[in-house]
Length: 195
Length: 396
Image (cartoon, rainbow over all chains, first blue to last red; front, side, top):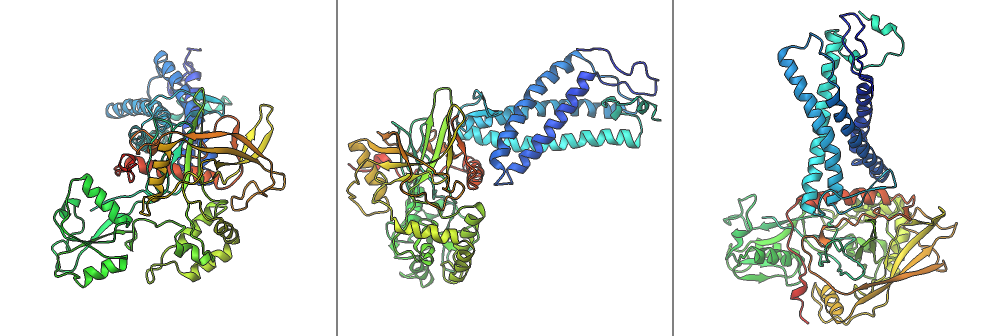
């Protein structure tokens, strides 16, 4: 895994970028989480689509769990680049805690989903073929707690992701500090010359 | 005061070597993971009504305990409302005062309205629908006479179900919720929904509006046809001698990937049992006694669809001459009262299928799975009502 930090050769006004693997993990997680949330909210409101979407939702959940675990390992091995100077002391604390909350939610939500299906006594099958072992006792009361928790965590995820996206957009658009570019890939080289 | 009763539609369960039960309001048990359970259709509030001026009349809600020592106007024995109330009171160790029995719901209300006996002291209990109308707690199924009569059906139509969960080595499961009907009345979720709306009792008569029902039937000829078929095959006298059917079509898939459309059914081997009682629990009591005297058996028949047979329409029966394969015998050897961990806690989702069985394009399957999941979630979080049938209380 590459450890060099891209962007180190850029001018001082260009923020440092995350490592390429970190950026890949970030966008992969973003796509999977948006898909899982969207499908999850859709399937419980769409009778005809429920059965097919449930299979996809559970498979994406399993994928998220795998990606997030790898991502946490990656995060421990690669310290992210320094923040832009536009982040003050108080906001810095918010950034730290929202990052922790995101990681915790990303890890907890698929685990709760997996445990919830386990507690209902239903076999947990993902990608159509792979059967996962139960990770919770088959018990309706345990199921109930986990089922409600799965919904609550989903709404929390929406809230934290919305805050995360809003903060980055506010920085990038209002403060023009290039916050978003720390996480982007540049196809051409011109992007870097953005003022 | 709140009480709840399960009014299962597809219900109960059993499993080879396990146990089972049936029909409205529950029963059963089964060892852990072998299964039997009721699907809760709806929960009604039990409502107390009292003459204006009665001490309880001004309260919006009251705990069950207010009934301790109260004189009550109740329906005759056999009324499900009464049964639910008495069970709830017994469970809470609350003794009512004297009970005045009045036949019919209207009679009960009349009795309270005119202070039947001698004073204003007698409230009565009835169930109230969530929309605020009075309605009896039990027997509110979609096959009540006032619902089936508009279809021109004379024979009583009773629907009861059997839920089974088979476990396979490696953890795979096959769950199935079957009904004792030849076909299902609807072939789409929309049709089912429309039928429920059309069956809604009118506030004036307490019965479905014939005009609304006629309009529904005009829009859903498939239901009219299915109801005719259902009316021509009255239910067997007991649970154990009932034929249970998958109703929906599934694919059985061979190792080489060939998909064969199949509907399955359980044909009773056990002869009908004598019914020793005629009370509301007669079917349950007969079942309990029957299983004590010997195992109950059904033959699992797999009916193979021909290319011309509808795979996506549960209202249409397949011709009787289709190839049917005897796939084995289901033997039920014991029965248990429902309790935590047995069939009570299982969601008989028809899409919990083992490798080798797949869902068809029948548009009822996904909605069934979705609705059962939503129902299971609600059921899991509400307080559990006491079992409606206690196996140990059934006399030999």
